[in-house]
Image (cartoon, rainbow, N blue to C red; front, side):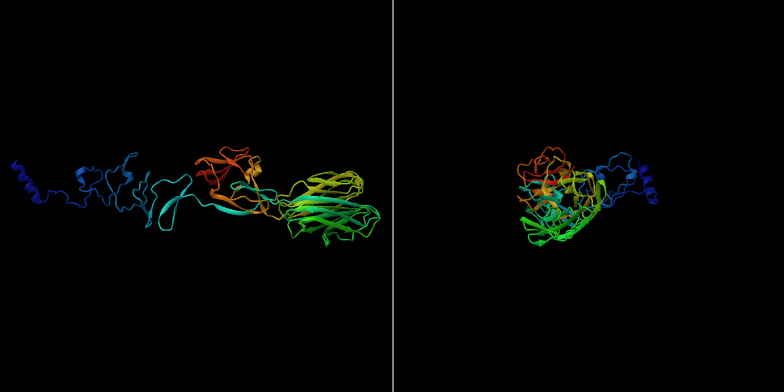
Length: 438
């Protein structure tokens, strides 16, 4: 044994043998790659500047560190499958936030109060303010859809002043929104009508006229007549033939810039006639006056006969539907062989977006779903509509359930109507997070 001690001492003296002492507490110790750390190799639970190179780990292997607490640790480009943060604070980019102690409800998100305190809250609702279409009413929480303001015929009247009568007169009752009176007339002798029709004593505005040897046809309009009964009078210079006048009370018509478009037409010894114009306003509606001297008139392409006289063929017609999108629009009529003349007019709508209680019965109203009204709204008045976020408008909702449009106007439920539209997820019995998706 003494020989071994002598040899070791000699080696140490020559520097060929280094005798290592145990590492001092908190000393920085390096271990070569591949080292297996033993419990006594680390004096404390603090490890500094320790890096692990993933390429040095066997494929599919796990690296687990047990019993180590990190204080003020900094990581760059770290990836973890699970991040656990203990305590009530979280520091991000130098800002320390106080976090909630429990999870929020379905659909809620973390929001700050501006003083670094985070809490769960439902997203704020976004609102629109849109008029409710005339003829409808809603209650709080009713589902509504958006629709374009379409020209409609509220009332109409016709008067025939026979030979010997210089004046044609009639009246219509109109009470709807954005009123416009459209006046058509024809003289069966082809004599120009030099008189101007009046509405409640005020002159109407001329649109267009045309004539052939037998028939002269005319069109005028008058915007914003008095709500109620409107008297229309037309006086002509000639009394030798019949004078026919039609008056249409229209709703939802633009109150300036009318007509949208116009055109005239005639033909000789023909049995049908087609008028075509190019509309400017979207959802405009077309009307046509037709005079031919006699015979039965029937509707053709995109035309609905509103009134016709078989004894002289005087007729007026409207387009089947509003023209959408704006562009080429045609109307056609058929009749016994004769020499007709026509005036076709396009009337522009107000262009407003209106609301109507929605139903899942039809695809168009289902797809047009916009949101929920905040309170009961009467016909023609402006509604506040929640279109996104949290709509706190209901009662009896089942938290966590998806809600759909139902077939009854304005209603929703946990099962879909005829056409499926998901409108929201219940966050509580009173709150619906609006989703609006097919």
